[in-house]
Image (cartoon, rainbow, N blue to C red; front, side):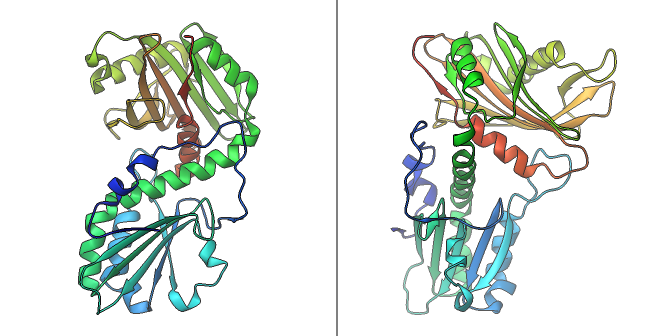
Length: 337
């Protein structure tokens, strides 16, 4: 167990934040599988007063904010509650735990982090303070780091789930064409395969999910600025992703939900720019969320962009987008291209 004393948790586990397990060997563990719903956090308090008061409110206000980039309102996480005296062995296996404690004898607030305490994958945060006010102040200083850690735990769970069902034919084609591997699961097929573009699709009666992978020569850092990333994306999807009627085509929404960008120096494949937003179809009413990662391949000196997008009208999409994000996080460059 790791302990911090008002030190940002994101720094404590920075080295492990983007760690990956061996892609070819299943993880061996004697621990039970974690329980709990996708994107769910269980807050354990000493009594109902803490849950109904400022401590529970602070946790709910932060984690239950709407996730950006979705066409319908959906929370980042759902926060459930349990009092400590009801924390049975079953609930100790919950995938994401925050255990709150007020101890009047403690001088300084204490934050403890632990992976795979009673199950796997699992992340546990214990925050102890001398008063509810001190507890909330401590949480407020740590909350951004906490979210990163819980996001990582959700990705790990999906990666473990999809690893046994990898589509080796698609993975081999990605390696041959772009010099990357990415753990695309079974159920997808290659819809378009060009020298510098691949559309990997999954189609059901009421849903469409896809990965796009494309590359362009890298000139300088301006190629990774937000305006250029969107300009390139729009030109690519305009060319390759037609709409349902003649003359319609995909583009990036720039009015209803503007795309947002984040640099990720420690993305598994290297320094990346994350783009998150909404796509729509010019000439039709189709729309949905997307997330992409643009990375410079040092071997080929090209920018490789890997994107996941979803079309699932009038249905929740948060968990599906988390699935795609976890697959995109498995992207790695291989030698020889």
